[in-house]
Image 1 (cartoon, rainbow, N blue to C red):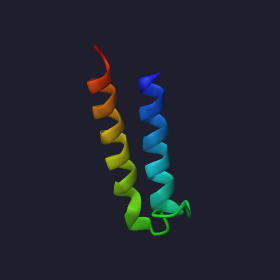
Image 2: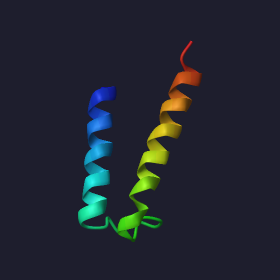
Image 3: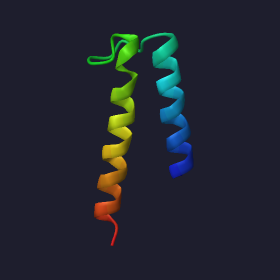
Image 4: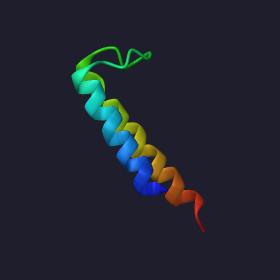
Length: 51
């Protein structure tokens, strides 16, 4: 499942570079890095929650 999520996030970053998604905070092409930051934060939270 984590591999699928990583592929989805990479695909979202690629789409953001080609055609901006238009969500608040993702209105410009240069905002693709925000998706990567979100992914890193979610991975950190997952590591902290796991025993």
